[in-house]
Amino acid sequence: MSFFKPVQALVLGVLLLPLAMGNDYVLHMLTLWALYSLLALSLNIVVGFLGELSFGHAAFFGVGAYTSSLLVMQLHWPMWITPLAAAAMAALLGWLIGYVSLRIVGPQFAILTLGFGAIVLTITNYWVDVTRGPMGLSQIPAFSLPALGLDFSHAIHMYPLALLLLIVVLYGCHVLQHSRQGRAFIATRENRELAAAIGINVFRTKLIGFVVATALAGFTGALYAHYLRVITPDLMSLSYMSAMLIMVVIGGKGSLYGPVLGALLYTFLLEALRSSGAWRMVVFAALLIACVVFLPGGLVSLWRRRQGAIA
Amino acid sequence: MSKTALLQALKLSKRFGGLQAVQSVDLSVNVGEVVGLIGPNGAGKTTLFNMLAGSMAPSGGQLFFDGLDCTGASAHQMAKLGLARTFQITSVFSALSVWENVLAATYRHQQASWMSAFFQTRGFRDEQVLMQHRAEEALRQTQLLHRNRDTAHSLPYGEQRKLEIAIALACAPRLLLLDEPAAGMNPEEGAKLVQLIHRLRDQGMAVLLVEHHMRVVMGVCDRVVVINSGEKIAEGSPQEVVQHPEVIRVYLGREAVHA
Image (cartoon, rainbow over all chains, first blue to last red):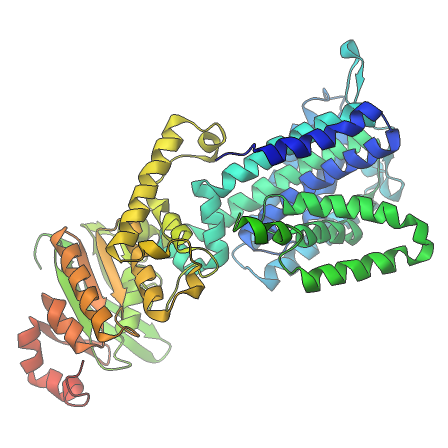
């Protein structure tokens, strides 16, 4: 169960280095990477561990972002509670959607989640009184600890926090892979009938996984909203959804570090390609295709070839 | 109907539309007993088997496990009660290693939550060690220990069948249902299977097997139940059953006793 090995410590060191240099732009990108990693890890529970395709994950991310922002802005809830409330709200919706749709699995489930995502996006767009519609919310209060001089809308303060949360969630996923519950996830993914035959309640197991994943997505949405301080219904759109799926699949679904690597690639490669102007998305798409064709197991499979099986 | 019946089916029936697949079958398996279920193709063996395992709800009759009414219980509920099964068409977690396959099967006997795993509590660690012992024991009994790092789908067919049994054993069941376990095994592997079943019975496990290989059925079963067209036509010791005129007519007469 050794989670921290020298390699991990080295990587962590490298990740902390930009803090010393204090380049705002790089730190901002790294913060986004850490937040996207959390999001990708949550989707990975559904896509990688449970083996179900969900197109509704962006909606849970958005619900979390809106819930936390609105609770602070409209109801003046204390800000350290609202991300948890956002997670609870997303989990509640996740439970509802999962309860209705997880009895059906495979493509039908994917379509149901697609429909759910569209409904949430539409409501957010048209419920102008509360969500301000396509205008989105701006001037969302940032987390801060004035006593310590910390303002978490600044990357230099937010990045270490996001990184810490990422490590905690990574450790949680690592532990999950080796726990009873995690093995049950994998078993239902691999063979439903046999999973039931060894005593696993397949529906309940999938529901638990789905609710946990949606809660984490909602929580990440809240962090994202209070960091960027501006959100629009775009968060719930299919472009965010496809971004998340790209991170998980390119990185390596079902693995521990795959989604994190995928988020890294997505965040920095898209930035690096800015210089190619109009060709940016074309080049990016071509790279993605090459990746899927030559590395069907994702980026982590490069490493795994050396290390032996990780997942 | 001994009072130590672990599994007891009373007038179990299954109807698919106009087809009566199983008609009012009584069947019991006692503690420490090996019962064989035989019959020609299409006799309803697999349907009956699936009803016993909870993967198919009966349309009539009752099912008891250790005196508890579990008519209509689902597969995972039956497994929780202590019933483990194999499948007619080999069913393993093919993308996982042999070791992960059997470790997953210890699910029923684990209690440690994710939280206790997160904090690596003593309870969690002790349980992990215990489950690893159980998984190791299941692999040892099926002579698959040397294969533990191999991916399940890379095993030859005969070993995949053994892995299925190992998975069932790692569940530490009280009743083991085997659906044609010797299918695809060579005579030597079949003989080892017979030995294994004897050993399990001696450990107090009850076994019900559906089997085509008569040598396996004759060699291992204490009692044999014969069904044809969904109805039970004979029951008794292997010797009694092979001499039963009805059995000879519907089954043995058509498919001569072969190994």
